[in-house]
Image (cartoon, rainbow, N blue to C red; front, top):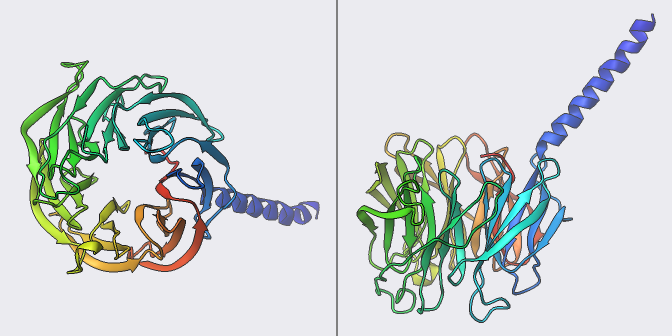
Length: 391
């Protein structure tokens, strides 16, 4: 009798424990980078509930730093690298890069060190395949000195050293306002880690480097052969993303509002398709930005700014990597600079920089299509969103 009376209590406790565990699994920490010319203080660490789609508006942590516009997490999530997109005319006129340690239990951030990027407005960074170098893109708004790609050594403890290599490019000068000098917008490593691809908006080219720190410890990047991929005049390449299998790549062309699709093999990108995002809209409506693939590799999401302010959803051909448009969805705001799929795949979070908000949109995990707006969170000039997950 006693056993029968205790058993329901044990069952109830077990169910309750399972509920707590499930609830914990639904909660994830999100890092938000921002521009700090207005009210934003820097980096925000927030909690997101993948069950409800709600982002907690009370920050877990706020890191005060100037213009932390792009965030790069190490694969083991022990380090965070941040570009401080400073330049002439700003509160801090010197472009910088910061390194933070991440507490393995609390995920709290603590500064390791900060160095100069040796360029203006560093706008993007990524780690080399071996994690030994941080590749920093100095965009540089002004013509002189123009944009550069900087290579910064990263020590085992996460400390950054000053750049050991700077690479500059010749501009295309097609657009007299935006292409009179180089503007390196992003640089990423190939899936095998042997090459680095630098997208230069000012040159209308993707520059290709062989990454060989063993042969050239002081200058790990050497121009590959061929040394660049030519893009359409005035197109303005921005961000490049490789497919999970490493056979294809997609590139946003900011100024033309297009996505170029490539086959990839052995350091060579061969264009296969060019997709128009603007749908015949006039020039002010052209401003392609971020692109991310779904975790299953079946869908590609691309943001388009300007006067359109949309996220486009594309089906990816599994064999060819080519794209087929499925949906255009308003971002319910202005200037979707970046966005992120949450770990559950049920939501898309959008950083609307100019309307000062993060918008949470429902996503059908089966079809990948975007649905209703779940939440709008006020956030001054958000620029990047990164979930704290092991890569």
